[in-house]
Amino acid sequence: MTVYTDRSRILTYQRCPRRRYYEYHQDGLGIVPKRTALPLAVGGAVHAGLADLLQGEGEDCAVVSALEELAKHQEGLELDLSEAVAQAAPVEDLYGYDIEAQLHASLGMDDIGRLSRVDTAKSDFDKYLYAEQSALVEAMVRAYARRRLRPLLDQYEVLEVEREGQWELSDGIWFASRPDALLRDRELGYLYIQSFKTAAAWDIRKERDAERDMQGLSECVEAERRLGERISGIRYEYLFKGDRWRDKDLTRKLGIESRVQKSHLVRAYLMSGMTSADAQWCWSYDYHKEDGAASKLYWKTWRPAAVWEHMPIKDWIDMLDATIPVSEEGRDLGFQGPAQSAGYTSTHPLDEVFHPPIVVYRNDDQLRDWLEQTEHQEQSIALDVQAAESAHDAVRRTHMNKFFPQFRQSCCYPTTCPYDKICFGPEHIQRDPLGSGLYKIRTPNHPQEGSVEANTGSGKL
Image 1: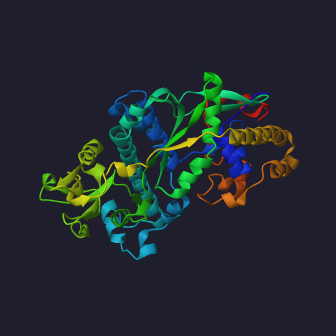
Image 2 (image 1 turned 30 degrees about the vertical axis):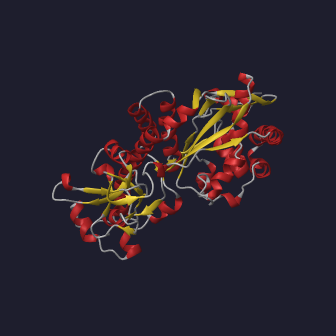
Image 3 (image 1 turned 120 degrees about the vertical axis):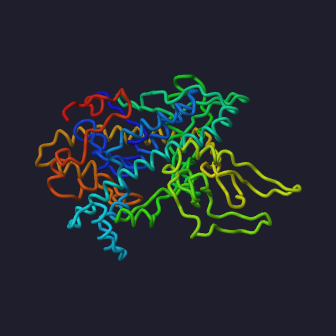
């Protein structure tokens, strides 16, 4: 029996055993929603671009790779439940806006049903969302290339990028891993695993989570066994994409609740002129004057705008990157550049996108604890999968409840579980998730697990 596991499925089991079964064992390889969660799609695309940068590809080539990865999800980006639910009703029902006449005029119809209006608006929003996220992915890759790549390469030599590896956790159970990169400190010679993380924003919990993250333990094992050298620690870099906020202008235009990415990489403040050449931009709403007094843009003059609708994202990143520190008579005034027409800012706009790297060092006792816990967990799961799949239909539900219970505290927090419809939805979805059209067979994360037998140990699924 050969079974593969990895960090993602180990964490999934600890979040909810039932989700682990659906995502990695149901119908052989596991099933996943047809629509990809927005954070997962964006994170994967950014990682593809960063991998190219670490391998010496140019900025433009890295952007192409990132956008090609995002394009795989063009027809199905899944919003968080709260955002999706907010789109379920026309705006006038929620906020009292009267847009019926506007919709009739724009669609050229005398009569239009409520549901039809929402479906049309959702289709328009999906197109907007993909354009926005494409701009965001490009901007994040370009920002990293301009501000963070050189400091990393100055300090470290990149030895490997996304190298597939595996090591035997227990008899017949193999742990598959693919670190973002393996680095060697140029001065001291120490080895480090590099890990990129995309997040909406920073809070202290992320730093504490990194200190406890099993990634620093699990991904070190394969490299140490293969190279015969100790991995000193793991180096985390966080890239911030911003929260999603309700946008009044887009909401009025589409007629449904519409949220946008609150990131100055893709949205800024525009003061229109007589021609496009007269337009002025500010990446920050808050700024300070020469005397140091804090100030804000005048909201009637400066309106939020989607940058990619006015210029190529590369041009906007060029403007942001051209920001420089300004001083006068020995006094630092702040940062100023073509992307901030009003006043000065206290920080460089591209540096706002990153948190200083965090290095978490190895601990042998913690590694031993993790190995023993994980070995026992994965041995039990391999046997439980076989038991559940070999059970007759009459008792299979009981087996699932025993071996893969539902952890209900994980159903809706921190986000809604993508398998909520199977656990608590209509009977036809519970009986036949694939037949519902909402799910598809999972594409293996690692090439070596590409068969049913390798994933389950039985082939019976």
